[in-house]
Image 1 (cartoon, rainbow, N blue to C red):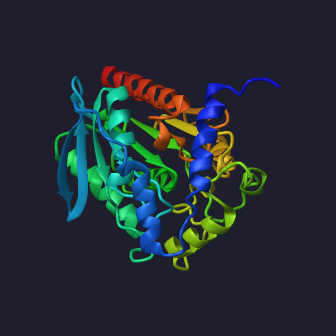
Image 2: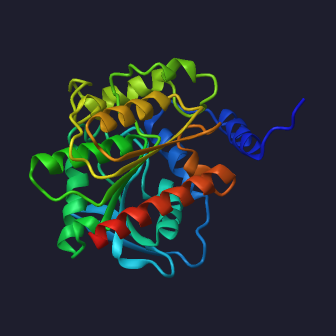
Image 3: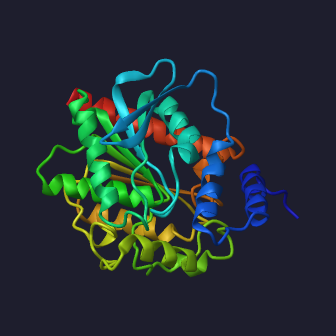
Length: 304
């Protein structure tokens, strides 16, 4: 029998750990579980963290030595629109900024069911406007999001486009949730290998966020949108994700609209595998790849 690759061994250890700690039914306990995925990861000593507020919303700057203070990643965390926080993704955001050579600004947008659609979009736009008002030029901003945050990032871009506002230099989407109508075939095909996300759980999350909104509304499910004019976009997804089809179809819709889209499918990786990068080599490599992409795009925008 062939020896499993390091990537397979790494992610199988994460699978086993997640299986040993099943998702609780209580919302507060669910939020605490998601926060613990990142809050227990220590930050390197050279990461500088600075809390701030954006229109009363908690937000957080991070920076590492050598970060270009004129460039920034605006990051929207995952959590299905009902969980996730600054704490859950702090380690990922800091590492992404290190790899990209930028500062980062993570935003604690309002969550459902207390604040359903479109509250999160308004908060994402407020975060972007805050950067513009702080002196960042659009072409020096990378807008990023994971899972629900990925869909939210695209919705924010569409909202900016509709308002005639300048768009950021690039998009980075990891494991994006882009179809709240839940029509992707991988929801069932990958159900046995993705320990984080299932069709039933996504249906709960969608109901809480939509609050009666059509799940095919372009601002909640951007695969149904006209994506023309979006900035260069990197999409990263794991081959073992239930949301694999959401990423593949988004890439297709973007490409058909003449968007410069780069799709990376990472073998064996589960949903939101970046969260586990300290233990998963493919998580480290994928963050390094995203960093190189962001550097290249923001460098190119600065030269144009």
